Length: 282
Ligand SMILES: Cc1cc2nc3c(=O)[nH]c(=O)nc-3n(C[C@H](O)[C@H](O)[C@H](O)COP(=O)(O)O)c2cc1C
Image 1 (tube, rainbow, N blue to C red):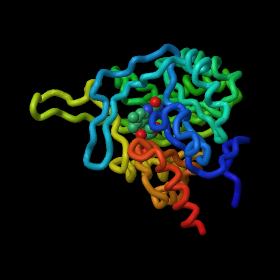
Image 2 (tube, protein in one colour):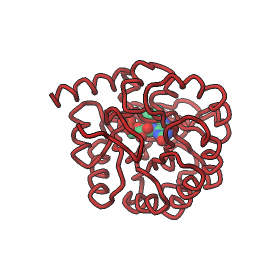
Image 3 (cartoon, rainbow, N blue to C red):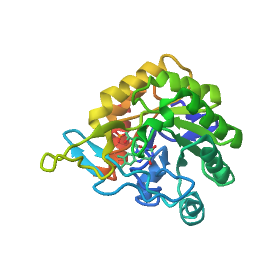
């Protein structure tokens, strides 16, 4: 079988655990170790408390979350969490989030001399209050952020894009011009749930990000559409719950896939999908 690589980084299989759905990789280590990689929960420069509860709303075929990037901040991540991850036997990809190119630059600088394998730039989180400012909806800002990180690090860069009210091909091109090594498509989609008893939004963060099987056909479309128009390696993400889903994403042009919400239901989902994928491949 041909090796799966992004630049010089090799993946033992195409399955990666998606950010925010497998903690920092410090739980269920035996599962993480058998995957091609794990992406940590998003890290910001300063600690974040996240949004008020409730943070999760179950829909007919997916979930809305408004976690709001709760995390201990990059310094605590480096001193308290990263040492625990040294024994991981899979690629460790750190997901970083910020409000400006300067913040992303500082995060990349702080992580550059650590032993992580790659950075995933999250410019597509719908759960921070000022949604209109989502960097990933603006190709110029996307370029600036990726460029700032590229100048700061030689580590592999994956840029995680949104398809919320923007053509992802335009931002993929901007990320490519700025020097990203790969793109991940897609992050969660905007959503809202209203409490019919109170007439108010159900989620403490008011709006949320929709994930799970509900978004799969759209996410798959995004991968297929961008893959046929750009040369960058693509990591497909959205609604994967089975090996069949993985095969579809690979057919659509993904090199790797990320499994997200399925882990929340069953932390062994990645393993089960891997076993089934190997069985289908014979
Ligand atoms: C509870 C939760 C937290 C998430 N946190 C992050 C995050 O910190 N950074 C990020 O880039 N994506 C985050 N995501 C998005 C997922 O990584 C993934 O892109 C999205 O859920 C779509 O995949 P899925 O349908 O398989 O869940 C989060 C998703 C969920 C459900």
